Length: 611
Ligand code: G6P
Image (cartoon, rainbow, N blue to C red; front, side):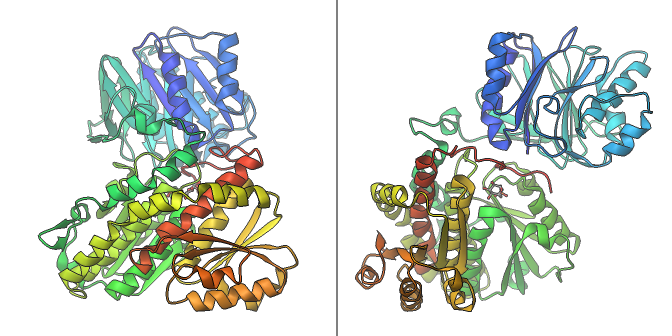
């Protein structure tokens, strides 16, 4: 979390930094700050959203050809002005912005002696003090050398970005387990946490790898390791443009991204079939290796975890391999039994979630091959995995994930079919037929989006429901979890999900007159069971909103207060791609009706690069 941007070599560097911070604000919005470099460092920082900083910049115009900016998701120290980044050393000669956590900051602070005072409570500030001390000890100031020496002393996960008066045109950045990209275009040097911040300037970027440090000047950038040896970052080009990162007339990014799902899913499915076989070329997989897989672990966090639950159903059904789905932050701290025959699928929109990256590393340490199912091209997970399947959803900006989720499900279906194909479990013709049917999802999604006015009415009616229970079975269960998560994330209403069959073992005690239950009851082999579970909660006074499918809704209408009707899914396992959409819209409309900040919900950040 936290977003970093740096620009050197442009007269309007401040405008560029502010524009970049706007695109990085999804990474955290507890405070924002900027420092302009050159012969002296001028900084401005404000608690709260970026708009507080931009208002302050209007009162105190700041200009310069070099600067760095930051948007914060607080870890150490309250989200106030003082703890906002940038942080400077006491002489004001070095400034730093930081994403991540410096775990040994207390020991480092102590090493500077009792007479050194710190302005903030952050773990970050010590890095500015240490670099300033190094620079002061040099005969010829060299910011890169100073940062190298300091970075060697740091523990934790961080990307750091420095400017210093002693090296006035230079930005130096260091990366260790938190993302950082660098770029150079038209005589300007850039760095940022995410390509979204730079897309207005260039599509050609380089992602630093762990342990790399870069010096960025208007002439270009050089990348070295901690010993100063020249090293290569991961260079790549981005295949989307500025338009994709704008709201394009929608009130919120979340709404825009919900409506982009037909296109996103079409892109995920595109060009997968050739010569009658499913091709997932990015997987770089070995057929023999796939044949020997005897177990799959799916590791992810948040919304991505819920897509993994659908992927489990697909792999077990089609490929016949046992699958476990696990929260990445739990997996990494236990002793899972893996071998080179265990396939790990790490699912992540950003490819930068620390817990997921660490869990994948934990698996790799035990020789398990790792496939990354990710959206962001060139991200850490994508680079480090043995194989990658991109979801091609395009940039997702809203904190609440929508199109990344549906494309992950589609990616998971592709993986299930691919494993079945490579293990000879299904005929090519069967796989081809399913793939053909999956091509109908985008049109079906368009139809689901037409439910929007109906969902908006329901949201208005239930906007104050103090507690909403989501229930489902089989493919409906991951969607129940996702529906509850969406509602919590952006409307701050209490919502929980349960397997519908578990209700009778406890949760049904919570039901009373007027409780709202959202029941996932699409057509499928558990439909009848769902109808029974709906009757059980209704008999106890719950108001039921059911999600059903054309053809079977007449049965539902007799038992539910409201029914939202989905078109028939092209395959039962693809049903979740459709059934989640009304729940995304429901949470969106509840949140807007309650006046909440849909795109930037409190306490959350889109990309979580801390543990
Ligand atoms: C954060 C976001 C969620 C997201 C989760 C995992 O918590 O707020 O929307 O699902 O991280 O992110 P990833 O990028 O790994 O999918």
